[in-house]
Amino acid sequence: MSMDIADATRASLARPFRMLIGAEWREASEGARMDVINPADEQSFASIPLGTATDIDRAVAAARHAFDNGAWTGLMPGRRAQILWRVADLLEERAQEFAELETLDNGKPVSAARAVDLTLAIGAFRYWSGWCTKITGETPTVDLPGPFMAMTLREPVGVVGIITPWNFPLVQAVVKIAPALAAGCTMVVKPAEQTSLTLLRLGEVLLDAGVPPGVVNIVSGLGSLTGAALAAHPDVDKISFTGSTPVGKTLLAAAQGNLKRLTLELGGKSPTILMEDADLDRAIPSIAGGIFRNAGQMCAAGSRLLVARAVADRVLEGLVQQAGALRIGPGIDPTTTLGPLVSAAQQHRVLSYVDGARRDGVAVVTGGHAAGDRGYFVEPTILLDPSATATVSREEIFGPVLVVTPFDDPADLARLANDTVYGLSANIWSRDVTAAYRLARQVKAGTITVNSGMIVGPALPFGGFKQSGWGREGGAEGLSAFMETKTIITAL
Image 1 (cartoon, one colour):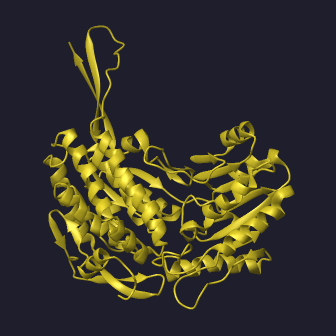
Image 2 (cartoon, helix red, strand yellow; image 1 turned 135 degrees about the horizontal axis):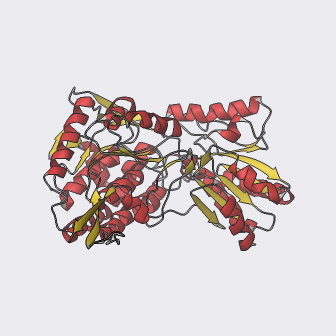
């Protein structure tokens, strides 16, 4: 490999990527492997095992054995906290390797992978390590004659199936793995087939830090086969899934066999609302980052801009300048600020949306085409004033495509913002913080920022209203998602 990568990354790529089941690094049960494609140059540079339902059975059995035998929950809470903190330390030591693997696998700029993805993943393990020693119950009053003592206990839900997406492969897995471990669960992790490398290497870090074998199992493979087998498995107690809303809906049927619990973090068509009095010098770069960062492949991307008509021309001019200043190229180049989309299929999907809008007469202010002659690149694109019923106004594109709609009446903003089946996030820009707060109370979304781009962190609950999902990740609610409450009443 001729690209400029760290020696540790080169050594990591030289070792085979295998699945972690129990204490063993395994090939798939049928021996099949799948090439890993660098989306920047369309070349294969590694391969991963194509797991089967048999591999899922083995992994679930290992997780069940570890849970039932107390391999993890039997450890003192303080010891579990030390292990999770040690995971963070070891991941920090290998941060450059993981960032470069993420970039080669996903396409994102390596500077972002190192500064954002690895920083968030390391911080999440440290945050959740603190929760291991802080899980408590209550002693509610029993309002009946006679002396009773009642207590509630918080217990881990059991074996968790974790199914992760390809846009933030490591981070989206860690924000599930770390709280599940803090809660005392064991698990089987199924990474996205497009981006499995950092998750397979994370298994090494977990074992090296002292996580007992069988507590975390990692099985790579196709979502339609391996992921479906995990979702439907009768010995899995909970599924935590991040991905598209259509796939999330299929999990409802998969979970009905044993009524396994579900946390679903799904799609979005998130509005950014720019009032006439907003600080445009701050807002315009933030809006551009909110849709062009990670090539727009973000569930919380600010993909709809509702802008006061009085400032719309100035805002559009600024956004076009921001788009033009992005440096498109391979993510492994440290000067790149806009990498490729993850796959040829995703590139085709995004360009199909833009072509459909163009055929319908929607103005393409900038971009709208593939970039370069190799790799899955798409130009940063701005579409102006499509109808409210247009496909690009309604559906999640998941690419660097911003839909801009000028508005005249601020009183209509809540209706415009809520005119979607999604409700994941929103951003409001206004110098009138009181008005912004009132609007935020009316917008139906799980996370709303005022005068800022999207803010995430392990202490902040994150999840959606409506078809953006069920449940929350982060903070106390994120821990509760992996726990059951047991009530014990004793007559004295």
